[in-house]
Length: 415
Picture (spheres, one colour):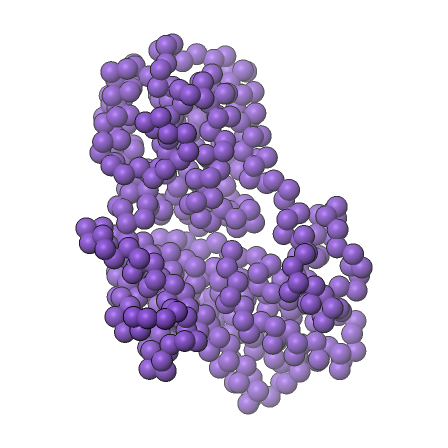
């Protein structure tokens, strides 16, 4: 995790123009993937106009003018902050989604203000979330709207100490009880797994929250082998070309036009002809992204390897691959229907509907790639566990069959 900040004093030459260009850059023009506000062409959010909880900024140009006026007319010092998490931290701590970053800043900006001698009631700020394959981050601009001191000064030692404190406050929130909640096994489904698949848990007589990191890592691997809900994900490059996004959007809109107008938008409830079209759309969408294609292949290969543990013959292997592909296409079909539902809800806003359709399509591809990587990792954990098990050959075969069956509904898991 990284947090840095610098001052933008009102005396800085050309600051007004710089702020305009910079806010536009973080809000919509960055080379990183800017996660935009629903139905809008920018992703700016924050707390201004006496708001104390973060909201999506509605008028980007009006906000740019407001910030420039605070800097140039009211002579407020602008502070530029940068909060970044590595891909591993993004995935392990659940910061793939903009809402999580928005919530984080909403809870911690008072600490940022405190470190910079800004009263809570005088704090205003704006931010935007950018996603990248290697790290994701938020750009942040904040200021004291009733500021009296017009030039910033803080001795370097004091500044460094304050920044260390701010980083600590963010870290406490981001890594709060790391691992503990994930392994708090209370729900009935996992209790059933524990009894049915006891070979995974023989050396965990009781599951407690004070395990050390090594024990937690072992437990996580065992849980991952039972359900992809506990599997790791592999971060992907979230940027799609305009043509890729248009292709995905075209498929989603095609399905929107043929689904029933009444009833639940779930694959299992669709007419057979719509199911066929959904699976065609799912296959076409997977082909638009190298990350989706790669994870698709890895999942099917892992399903084949799992089947070989108890039936290493061509006919059975083909059956395993075909079935794994069917599971994926059904799962992606449900994600397409979820995207259709999102678009239908927002369709009344004609002016911004195209932007929203493209946003939903980009999110859909990201969701598919992460889901496939999670399913693949779960299968890999199954295979590793079975190969390294001290069970008898027959017991290993029976367990392999149970584990294969337990993976058939993995598309239901969403984090």
